[in-house]
Length: 528
Image (tube, rainbow, N blue to C red; front, side, top):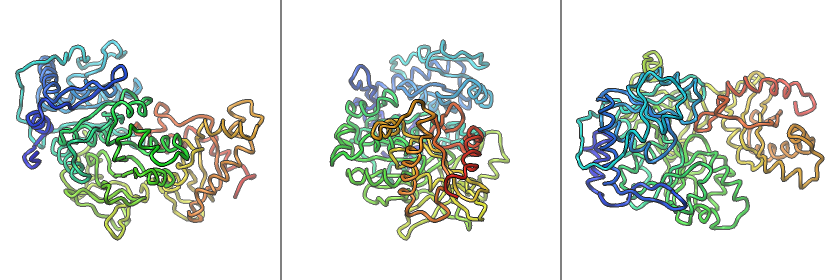
Protein backbone atom coordinates (compact mmCIF):
# COMPACT_ATOMS: atom_id res chain seq x y z
CA UNK A 1 0.00 0.00 0.00
CA UNK A 2 1.28 3.51 -0.86
CA UNK A 3 1.56 4.91 2.67
CA UNK A 4 2.47 8.47 1.66
CA UNK A 5 -1.00 9.11 0.21
CA UNK A 6 -2.99 7.93 3.25
CA UNK A 7 -4.41 10.90 5.17
CA UNK A 8 -6.85 9.32 7.59
CA UNK A 9 -7.99 6.02 9.12
CA UNK A 10 -10.96 5.80 6.73
CA UNK A 11 -8.61 5.88 3.72
CA UNK A 12 -6.38 3.30 5.39
CA UNK A 13 -9.44 1.05 5.71
CA UNK A 14 -11.05 1.63 2.30
CA UNK A 15 -7.70 1.20 0.51
CA UNK A 16 -7.34 -2.21 2.11
CA UNK A 17 -10.93 -3.15 1.21
CA UNK A 18 -10.26 -2.28 -2.44
CA UNK A 19 -6.98 -4.19 -2.37
CA UNK A 20 -8.04 -7.31 -0.47
CA UNK A 21 -11.84 -7.48 -0.89
CA UNK A 22 -12.87 -11.11 -0.49
CA UNK A 23 -9.88 -12.22 1.61
CA UNK A 24 -10.66 -13.30 5.19
CA UNK A 25 -9.67 -10.48 7.52
CA UNK A 26 -11.37 -10.38 10.93
CA UNK A 27 -12.00 -13.41 13.10
CA UNK A 28 -14.10 -13.92 16.20
CA UNK A 29 -14.18 -17.06 18.33
CA UNK A 30 -17.61 -18.62 18.57
CA UNK A 31 -18.49 -22.09 19.91
CA UNK A 32 -14.94 -23.37 19.74
CA UNK A 33 -13.99 -22.17 16.27
CA UNK A 34 -12.91 -19.00 14.45
CA UNK A 35 -15.57 -17.30 12.31
CA UNK A 36 -14.08 -15.07 9.61
CA UNK A 37 -15.36 -11.92 7.93
CA UNK A 38 -13.87 -10.69 4.65
CA UNK A 39 -12.79 -7.09 4.07
CA UNK A 40 -15.91 -6.57 1.94
CA UNK A 41 -18.19 -7.88 4.71
CA UNK A 42 -16.54 -5.59 7.24
CA UNK A 43 -16.98 -2.61 4.88
CA UNK A 44 -20.70 -3.34 4.48
CA UNK A 45 -21.24 -3.41 8.22
CA UNK A 46 -19.23 -0.23 8.76
CA UNK A 47 -21.20 1.64 6.09
CA UNK A 48 -24.50 0.67 7.71
CA UNK A 49 -23.21 1.90 11.06
CA UNK A 50 -22.33 5.21 9.36
CA UNK A 51 -25.95 5.56 8.22
CA UNK A 52 -27.31 4.91 11.73
CA UNK A 53 -24.87 7.35 13.34
CA UNK A 54 -25.89 10.01 10.83
CA UNK A 55 -29.54 9.34 11.64
CA UNK A 56 -28.65 9.84 15.31
CA UNK A 57 -27.36 13.31 14.42
CA UNK A 58 -23.63 12.60 14.35
CA UNK A 59 -21.64 14.75 11.93
CA UNK A 60 -18.06 15.77 11.31
CA UNK A 61 -16.41 17.27 14.39
CA UNK A 62 -18.79 15.67 16.90
CA UNK A 63 -17.60 13.33 19.62
CA UNK A 64 -18.98 9.81 19.99
CA UNK A 65 -18.20 7.81 23.12
CA UNK A 66 -18.13 4.02 23.22
CA UNK A 67 -18.34 2.00 26.42
CA UNK A 68 -17.94 -1.72 25.73
CA UNK A 69 -15.43 -4.58 25.87
CA UNK A 70 -13.56 -5.84 22.81
CA UNK A 71 -15.73 -7.27 20.02
CA UNK A 72 -16.01 -7.10 16.25
CA UNK A 73 -18.88 -4.64 16.79
CA UNK A 74 -16.47 -2.37 18.69
CA UNK A 75 -14.27 -2.30 15.59
CA UNK A 76 -17.20 -1.60 13.23
CA UNK A 77 -18.30 1.30 15.43
CA UNK A 78 -14.76 2.71 15.62
CA UNK A 79 -14.32 2.68 11.85
CA UNK A 80 -17.76 4.20 11.30
CA UNK A 81 -17.13 7.03 13.75
CA UNK A 82 -13.78 7.89 12.20
CA UNK A 83 -15.18 7.64 8.65
CA UNK A 84 -17.71 10.32 9.57
CA UNK A 85 -14.96 12.66 10.71
CA UNK A 86 -16.23 12.42 14.28
CA UNK A 87 -13.92 11.88 17.25
CA UNK A 88 -14.09 8.49 18.96
CA UNK A 89 -14.01 8.59 22.78
CA UNK A 90 -13.37 4.98 23.89
CA UNK A 91 -14.20 4.39 27.53
CA UNK A 92 -12.63 1.45 29.34
CA UNK A 93 -15.15 -1.31 30.00
CA UNK A 94 -13.82 -1.58 33.59
CA UNK A 95 -14.75 1.99 34.57
CA UNK A 96 -17.02 2.28 37.59
CA UNK A 97 -20.15 4.42 37.45
CA UNK A 98 -18.60 7.60 38.86
CA UNK A 99 -15.60 7.42 36.51
CA UNK A 100 -17.87 6.76 33.55
CA UNK A 101 -20.11 9.71 34.34
CA UNK A 102 -17.10 12.00 34.88
CA UNK A 103 -15.48 11.10 31.56
CA UNK A 104 -18.73 11.37 29.60
CA UNK A 105 -19.30 14.76 31.19
CA UNK A 106 -15.80 15.91 30.24
CA UNK A 107 -16.08 14.67 26.65
CA UNK A 108 -19.66 15.88 26.12
CA UNK A 109 -20.35 13.41 23.27
CA UNK A 110 -23.27 13.62 20.86
CA UNK A 111 -23.93 9.89 21.22
CA UNK A 112 -22.78 7.08 23.53
CA UNK A 113 -22.47 3.65 21.88
CA UNK A 114 -22.78 0.68 24.24
CA UNK A 115 -22.89 -3.08 23.92
CA UNK A 116 -26.39 -3.30 25.37
CA UNK A 117 -28.38 -0.18 26.33
CA UNK A 118 -30.30 -2.08 28.99
CA UNK A 119 -27.03 -2.68 30.85
CA UNK A 120 -26.29 1.04 31.11
CA UNK A 121 -27.75 1.81 34.52
CA UNK A 122 -27.14 5.54 34.15
CA UNK A 123 -29.06 8.65 33.26
CA UNK A 124 -27.03 10.14 30.45
CA UNK A 125 -27.57 13.43 28.68
CA UNK A 126 -26.31 12.20 25.30
CA UNK A 127 -28.34 9.80 23.18
CA UNK A 128 -27.43 6.16 23.77
CA UNK A 129 -27.19 3.62 20.92
CA UNK A 130 -26.48 -0.05 21.41
CA UNK A 131 -25.03 -2.42 18.83
CA UNK A 132 -28.47 -3.80 17.99
CA UNK A 133 -29.62 -0.27 17.06
CA UNK A 134 -26.52 0.29 14.93
CA UNK A 135 -27.58 -2.83 13.08
CA UNK A 136 -24.39 -3.65 11.17
CA UNK A 137 -26.50 -4.99 8.29
CA UNK A 138 -25.00 -5.33 4.84
CA UNK A 139 -25.63 -2.46 2.42
CA UNK A 140 -24.07 -1.73 -0.94
CA UNK A 141 -24.02 2.07 -0.95
CA UNK A 142 -20.76 3.64 0.20
CA UNK A 143 -20.57 6.75 2.30
CA UNK A 144 -17.29 8.61 2.11
CA UNK A 145 -16.37 11.99 3.50
CA UNK A 146 -13.31 14.19 3.21
CA UNK A 147 -11.53 13.97 6.54
CA UNK A 148 -8.41 16.09 7.00
CA UNK A 149 -5.27 14.54 8.46
CA UNK A 150 -5.39 17.21 11.17
CA UNK A 151 -8.97 16.29 12.18
CA UNK A 152 -9.35 15.08 15.79
CA UNK A 153 -9.75 11.30 15.56
CA UNK A 154 -9.88 10.20 19.16
CA UNK A 155 -10.05 11.56 22.68
CA UNK A 156 -8.47 9.17 25.18
CA UNK A 157 -8.81 9.64 28.89
CA UNK A 158 -5.65 8.46 30.54
CA UNK A 159 -4.94 8.90 34.22
CA UNK A 160 -1.67 7.04 33.89
CA UNK A 161 -0.07 6.36 37.24
CA UNK A 162 -1.24 9.63 38.85
CA UNK A 163 -4.98 8.93 38.98
CA UNK A 164 -5.87 12.35 37.52
CA UNK A 165 -7.72 11.89 34.20
CA UNK A 166 -6.58 13.87 31.16
CA UNK A 167 -8.03 13.74 27.68
CA UNK A 168 -5.31 13.07 25.11
CA UNK A 169 -6.26 14.44 21.67
CA UNK A 170 -4.92 12.40 18.75
CA UNK A 171 -5.50 13.30 15.11
CA UNK A 172 -5.85 11.06 12.07
CA UNK A 173 -2.28 11.93 11.14
CA UNK A 174 -1.09 10.88 14.60
CA UNK A 175 -2.76 7.46 14.32
CA UNK A 176 -1.98 6.74 10.67
CA UNK A 177 1.66 7.81 10.90
CA UNK A 178 2.28 5.68 13.99
CA UNK A 179 0.49 2.59 12.65
CA UNK A 180 2.54 2.73 9.46
CA UNK A 181 5.82 3.54 11.24
CA UNK A 182 5.56 0.67 13.72
CA UNK A 183 4.50 -1.76 10.99
CA UNK A 184 7.52 -0.87 8.89
CA UNK A 185 9.86 -0.80 11.90
CA UNK A 186 9.13 -4.39 12.96
CA UNK A 187 8.37 -5.78 9.50
CA UNK A 188 5.06 -5.65 7.64
CA UNK A 189 3.78 -9.16 6.90
CA UNK A 190 0.48 -9.52 5.03
CA UNK A 191 0.41 -13.23 5.87
CA UNK A 192 0.49 -12.83 9.64
CA UNK A 193 -2.35 -13.83 11.95
CA UNK A 194 -2.56 -11.64 15.03
CA UNK A 195 -4.50 -12.51 18.19
CA UNK A 196 -5.75 -9.40 19.99
CA UNK A 197 -6.56 -9.66 23.69
CA UNK A 198 -5.51 -6.25 25.02
CA UNK A 199 -8.39 -3.71 25.41
CA UNK A 200 -9.05 -1.74 22.23
CA UNK A 201 -10.07 1.20 24.41
CA UNK A 202 -6.34 1.57 25.11
CA UNK A 203 -4.15 3.09 22.39
CA UNK A 204 -1.58 0.27 22.50
CA UNK A 205 -3.94 -2.36 21.09
CA UNK A 206 -5.73 0.17 18.92
CA UNK A 207 -2.60 1.24 17.04
CA UNK A 208 -0.45 -1.90 17.22
CA UNK A 209 -3.20 -4.48 16.64
CA UNK A 210 -6.14 -2.72 14.95
CA UNK A 211 -4.72 0.06 12.76
CA UNK A 212 -1.53 -1.83 11.95
CA UNK A 213 -3.80 -4.66 10.75
CA UNK A 214 -5.58 -2.22 8.44
CA UNK A 215 -2.24 -1.18 6.96
CA UNK A 216 -0.90 -4.72 6.59
CA UNK A 217 -4.06 -6.28 5.20
CA UNK A 218 -3.40 -9.36 7.31
CA UNK A 219 -5.65 -11.37 9.66
CA UNK A 220 -6.82 -10.21 13.08
CA UNK A 221 -8.58 -12.50 15.58
CA UNK A 222 -10.20 -11.20 18.76
CA UNK A 223 -9.71 -13.38 21.81
CA UNK A 224 -12.95 -14.37 23.48
CA UNK A 225 -11.71 -13.05 26.82
CA UNK A 226 -8.54 -12.54 28.84
CA UNK A 227 -9.26 -15.81 30.62
CA UNK A 228 -9.27 -17.84 27.40
CA UNK A 229 -6.10 -16.54 25.71
CA UNK A 230 -4.18 -19.82 25.75
CA UNK A 231 -7.21 -21.77 24.50
CA UNK A 232 -7.84 -19.11 21.84
CA UNK A 233 -4.24 -19.49 20.65
CA UNK A 234 -4.93 -23.16 20.02
CA UNK A 235 -7.93 -22.19 17.87
CA UNK A 236 -6.53 -19.16 16.02
CA UNK A 237 -2.88 -20.33 15.77
CA UNK A 238 -1.52 -16.77 15.74
CA UNK A 239 1.88 -15.89 14.33
CA UNK A 240 2.01 -12.60 16.31
CA UNK A 241 0.75 -11.38 19.67
CA UNK A 242 1.00 -8.12 21.60
CA UNK A 243 1.05 -8.36 25.37
CA UNK A 244 2.04 -6.54 28.55
CA UNK A 245 4.70 -7.74 31.03
CA UNK A 246 2.13 -9.14 33.47
CA UNK A 247 0.78 -11.46 30.75
CA UNK A 248 4.25 -12.79 29.90
CA UNK A 249 5.02 -13.16 33.61
CA UNK A 250 1.94 -15.38 34.07
CA UNK A 251 2.85 -17.45 31.00
CA UNK A 252 6.38 -17.92 32.39
CA UNK A 253 4.92 -19.11 35.71
CA UNK A 254 2.66 -21.54 33.87
CA UNK A 255 5.51 -22.86 31.75
CA UNK A 256 7.98 -23.39 34.59
CA UNK A 257 10.85 -25.67 33.57
CA UNK A 258 9.19 -27.09 30.45
CA UNK A 259 11.46 -28.28 27.67
CA UNK A 260 12.26 -26.72 24.27
CA UNK A 261 9.26 -26.01 22.06
CA UNK A 262 6.78 -25.97 24.96
CA UNK A 263 6.14 -22.24 24.69
CA UNK A 264 5.40 -22.31 20.96
CA UNK A 265 3.10 -25.30 21.47
CA UNK A 266 1.26 -23.45 24.26
CA UNK A 267 0.57 -20.58 21.83
CA UNK A 268 -0.84 -22.81 19.09
CA UNK A 269 2.33 -23.92 17.32
CA UNK A 270 2.72 -21.10 14.78
CA UNK A 271 3.87 -18.14 16.89
CA UNK A 272 6.86 -16.24 15.50
CA UNK A 273 6.80 -12.87 17.32
CA UNK A 274 5.94 -11.81 20.90
CA UNK A 275 5.72 -8.02 21.20
CA UNK A 276 5.44 -6.24 24.53
CA UNK A 277 4.75 -2.74 25.79
CA UNK A 278 3.53 -0.92 28.87
CA UNK A 279 6.47 -1.58 31.20
CA UNK A 280 9.79 -3.38 31.52
CA UNK A 281 9.94 -7.17 31.44
CA UNK A 282 11.58 -9.03 34.30
CA UNK A 283 15.02 -10.42 33.30
CA UNK A 284 14.06 -13.96 34.41
CA UNK A 285 10.99 -13.87 32.15
CA UNK A 286 13.09 -12.51 29.27
CA UNK A 287 15.59 -15.34 29.68
CA UNK A 288 12.88 -18.02 29.71
CA UNK A 289 11.38 -16.75 26.43
CA UNK A 290 14.86 -16.49 24.90
CA UNK A 291 15.59 -20.12 25.80
CA UNK A 292 12.33 -21.13 24.13
CA UNK A 293 13.30 -19.34 20.91
CA UNK A 294 10.64 -16.64 21.21
CA UNK A 295 12.38 -13.55 22.65
CA UNK A 296 10.03 -10.84 23.94
CA UNK A 297 10.34 -7.87 21.56
CA UNK A 298 9.80 -4.93 23.88
CA UNK A 299 8.84 -1.45 22.71
CA UNK A 300 8.28 1.87 24.42
CA UNK A 301 5.62 4.51 24.10
CA UNK A 302 2.88 6.50 25.74
CA UNK A 303 -0.61 7.59 24.81
CA UNK A 304 0.59 11.12 24.02
CA UNK A 305 2.73 9.68 21.18
CA UNK A 306 0.00 7.48 19.63
CA UNK A 307 1.72 5.46 21.33
CA UNK A 308 4.91 3.84 19.89
CA UNK A 309 8.20 5.71 20.26
CA UNK A 310 10.60 2.79 19.88
CA UNK A 311 10.29 -0.88 18.93
CA UNK A 312 12.42 -4.01 18.68
CA UNK A 313 12.89 -5.99 15.49
CA UNK A 314 13.32 -9.75 15.73
CA UNK A 315 16.74 -9.49 14.05
CA UNK A 316 17.85 -6.61 16.29
CA UNK A 317 16.91 -7.95 19.73
CA UNK A 318 18.83 -6.68 22.76
CA UNK A 319 17.61 -7.93 26.15
CA UNK A 320 16.78 -5.15 28.58
CA UNK A 321 16.21 -2.52 25.88
CA UNK A 322 13.10 -1.22 24.11
CA UNK A 323 14.58 -1.15 20.62
CA UNK A 324 15.31 1.80 18.37
CA UNK A 325 13.17 4.93 17.86
CA UNK A 326 10.66 5.06 14.99
CA UNK A 327 12.25 6.30 11.76
CA UNK A 328 9.78 9.21 11.50
CA UNK A 329 10.45 10.49 15.05
CA UNK A 330 13.19 12.60 16.59
CA UNK A 331 14.10 11.23 20.01
CA UNK A 332 16.69 12.72 22.34
CA UNK A 333 17.57 12.91 26.02
CA UNK A 334 17.52 16.09 28.08
CA UNK A 335 20.45 17.00 30.32
CA UNK A 336 18.60 15.22 33.13
CA UNK A 337 18.09 12.09 31.01
CA UNK A 338 14.40 12.65 30.24
CA UNK A 339 13.20 11.21 26.93
CA UNK A 340 12.00 13.95 24.55
CA UNK A 341 10.06 13.19 21.35
CA UNK A 342 9.15 15.20 18.26
CA UNK A 343 7.28 14.04 15.15
CA UNK A 344 3.95 13.33 13.42
CA UNK A 345 2.59 10.99 16.10
CA UNK A 346 2.88 13.49 18.97
CA UNK A 347 -0.55 14.46 20.30
CA UNK A 348 -2.46 17.62 19.48
CA UNK A 349 -2.66 18.36 23.20
CA UNK A 350 -4.79 17.72 26.29
CA UNK A 351 -8.53 18.24 26.03
CA UNK A 352 -9.56 21.66 27.40
CA UNK A 353 -6.28 21.96 29.32
CA UNK A 354 -3.87 24.35 27.64
CA UNK A 355 -1.70 24.70 30.75
CA UNK A 356 -1.05 20.95 30.86
CA UNK A 357 -0.42 20.93 27.10
CA UNK A 358 2.13 23.73 27.38
CA UNK A 359 3.87 21.88 30.22
CA UNK A 360 4.06 18.62 28.23
CA UNK A 361 5.09 20.05 24.82
CA UNK A 362 7.87 22.63 24.84
CA UNK A 363 9.28 24.02 21.59
CA UNK A 364 7.68 21.13 19.72
CA UNK A 365 9.21 18.45 21.96
CA UNK A 366 6.99 16.10 23.99
CA UNK A 367 8.44 15.69 27.49
CA UNK A 368 7.64 12.08 28.36
CA UNK A 369 8.56 12.14 32.05
CA UNK A 370 10.52 8.93 31.49
CA UNK A 371 14.25 8.64 32.06
CA UNK A 372 16.29 6.76 29.48
CA UNK A 373 19.71 6.04 28.06
CA UNK A 374 21.01 4.86 24.69
CA UNK A 375 23.54 2.07 24.28
CA UNK A 376 26.38 2.29 21.76
CA UNK A 377 24.23 0.75 19.00
CA UNK A 378 21.35 3.20 19.47
CA UNK A 379 19.00 0.97 21.46
CA UNK A 380 16.95 2.79 24.09
CA UNK A 381 16.83 1.62 27.69
CA UNK A 382 14.22 2.93 30.15
CA UNK A 383 15.73 3.86 33.51
CA UNK A 384 12.60 4.99 35.37
CA UNK A 385 9.96 7.68 35.79
CA UNK A 386 11.20 11.17 36.64
CA UNK A 387 8.44 11.77 39.22
CA UNK A 388 8.72 8.30 40.78
CA UNK A 389 12.33 8.45 41.92
CA UNK A 390 12.61 7.45 45.58
CA UNK A 391 15.00 9.54 47.69
CA UNK A 392 16.23 7.55 50.68
CA UNK A 393 17.18 9.24 53.96
CA UNK A 394 20.79 8.52 52.99
CA UNK A 395 20.37 10.89 50.03
CA UNK A 396 20.57 8.07 47.47
CA UNK A 397 18.14 8.17 44.52
CA UNK A 398 16.51 4.92 43.42
CA UNK A 399 14.20 4.15 40.46
CA UNK A 400 11.60 1.78 41.98
CA UNK A 401 10.56 0.43 38.58
CA UNK A 402 14.01 -1.12 38.05
CA UNK A 403 13.86 -2.97 41.38
CA UNK A 404 10.29 -4.09 40.63
CA UNK A 405 11.42 -5.32 37.23
CA UNK A 406 14.11 -7.50 38.82
CA UNK A 407 11.72 -8.96 41.40
CA UNK A 408 8.62 -9.48 39.26
CA UNK A 409 10.26 -12.42 37.48
CA UNK A 410 9.84 -14.55 40.59
CA UNK A 411 7.18 -17.28 40.30
CA UNK A 412 6.28 -16.44 43.90
CA UNK A 413 5.31 -12.83 43.13
CA UNK A 414 2.08 -11.71 41.47
CA UNK A 415 2.59 -7.94 41.83
CA UNK A 416 5.10 -5.78 43.69
CA UNK A 417 5.31 -2.11 44.63
CA UNK A 418 8.58 -0.69 45.98
CA UNK A 419 8.38 2.17 48.51
CA UNK A 420 10.84 3.97 50.79
CA UNK A 421 10.82 7.74 50.33
CA UNK A 422 12.76 9.33 53.24
CA UNK A 423 13.41 5.89 54.75
CA UNK A 424 16.83 4.34 55.37
CA UNK A 425 16.17 1.45 52.97
CA UNK A 426 13.71 0.34 50.33
CA UNK A 427 10.59 -1.57 51.27
CA UNK A 428 8.36 -3.77 49.12
CA UNK A 429 4.64 -4.48 49.19
CA UNK A 430 4.35 -7.98 47.72
CA UNK A 431 1.24 -9.59 46.31
CA UNK A 432 2.08 -13.31 46.47
CA UNK A 433 1.26 -15.83 43.78
CA UNK A 434 -1.49 -17.81 45.56
CA UNK A 435 -0.60 -21.07 43.80
CA UNK A 436 3.04 -20.73 44.84
CA UNK A 437 2.05 -20.00 48.45
CA UNK A 438 -0.22 -23.05 48.56
CA UNK A 439 2.49 -25.25 47.06
CA UNK A 440 5.06 -24.12 49.65
CA UNK A 441 2.63 -24.64 52.52
CA UNK A 442 1.93 -28.15 51.27
CA UNK A 443 5.60 -28.94 50.56
CA UNK A 444 6.76 -27.85 54.05
CA UNK A 445 3.59 -29.16 55.77
CA UNK A 446 3.05 -25.86 57.52
CA UNK A 447 0.31 -25.35 60.07
CA UNK A 448 -1.67 -22.56 58.36
CA UNK A 449 -5.33 -21.93 59.19
CA UNK A 450 -6.04 -18.63 57.45
CA UNK A 451 -4.93 -16.36 54.62
CA UNK A 452 -3.47 -13.94 57.16
CA UNK A 453 -1.39 -16.71 58.72
CA UNK A 454 -0.21 -17.82 55.27
CA UNK A 455 1.36 -14.43 54.54
CA UNK A 456 2.83 -13.94 58.04
CA UNK A 457 4.18 -17.45 58.72
CA UNK A 458 7.94 -17.22 59.51
CA UNK A 459 8.90 -19.93 57.00
CA UNK A 460 6.89 -18.28 54.21
CA UNK A 461 8.50 -14.93 55.01
CA UNK A 462 11.94 -16.55 54.95
CA UNK A 463 11.21 -18.02 51.52
CA UNK A 464 10.42 -14.51 50.24
CA UNK A 465 13.50 -13.08 51.97
CA UNK A 466 15.66 -15.65 50.16
CA UNK A 467 13.93 -15.00 46.83
CA UNK A 468 14.38 -11.21 47.14
CA UNK A 469 18.08 -11.58 47.93
CA UNK A 470 18.58 -14.01 45.03
CA UNK A 471 16.97 -11.70 42.47
CA UNK A 472 18.77 -8.58 43.71
CA UNK A 473 22.23 -10.12 43.92
CA UNK A 474 23.49 -7.89 41.06
CA UNK A 475 21.67 -4.74 42.24
CA UNK A 476 23.44 -1.84 43.95
CA UNK A 477 23.44 -1.36 47.73
CA UNK A 478 20.72 1.31 47.61
CA UNK A 479 18.53 -0.97 45.42
CA UNK A 480 18.41 -3.72 48.05
CA UNK A 481 15.02 -4.30 49.68
CA UNK A 482 15.48 -4.23 53.43
CA UNK A 483 11.83 -4.43 54.50
CA UNK A 484 8.85 -6.16 52.93
CA UNK A 485 5.21 -6.99 53.63
CA UNK A 486 3.30 -9.86 52.03
CA UNK A 487 -0.22 -8.61 51.31
CA UNK A 488 -3.42 -10.65 51.79
CA UNK A 489 -5.02 -9.29 48.60
CA UNK A 490 -4.06 -8.25 45.09
CA UNK A 491 -3.85 -4.69 43.80
CA UNK A 492 -6.88 -3.86 41.67
CA UNK A 493 -8.13 -1.50 38.98
CA UNK A 494 -11.38 -1.03 40.91
CA UNK A 495 -9.52 0.22 44.01
CA UNK A 496 -7.57 2.69 41.85
CA UNK A 497 -4.29 0.83 42.50
CA UNK A 498 -3.69 -0.29 38.89
CA UNK A 499 -4.26 1.36 35.54
CA UNK A 500 -6.20 -0.52 32.86
CA UNK A 501 -2.88 -1.78 31.46
CA UNK A 502 -1.98 -3.00 35.00
CA UNK A 503 0.65 -0.35 35.75
CA UNK A 504 1.02 0.65 39.40
CA UNK A 505 -0.66 3.78 40.76
CA UNK A 506 1.80 4.37 43.56
CA UNK A 507 -0.03 7.15 45.37
CA UNK A 508 -3.22 5.08 45.67
CA UNK A 509 -1.28 1.99 46.77
CA UNK A 510 0.61 3.99 49.40
CA UNK A 511 -2.67 5.39 50.72
CA UNK A 512 -4.58 2.11 50.73
CA UNK A 513 -1.73 0.21 52.39
CA UNK A 514 -0.48 2.98 54.70
CA UNK A 515 -0.92 0.79 57.78
CA UNK A 516 1.10 -2.05 56.24
CA UNK A 517 3.89 0.32 55.22
CA UNK A 518 4.02 1.84 58.72
CA UNK A 519 4.11 -1.60 60.34
CA UNK A 520 6.77 -2.79 57.89
CA UNK A 521 9.17 0.02 58.79
CA UNK A 522 8.29 -0.11 62.49
CA UNK A 523 9.33 -3.79 62.58
CA UNK A 524 12.84 -3.91 64.04
CA UNK A 525 13.15 -7.67 63.66
CA UNK A 526 14.08 -7.56 59.97
CA UNK A 527 16.98 -5.97 58.21
CA UNK A 528 17.90 -2.35 59.02
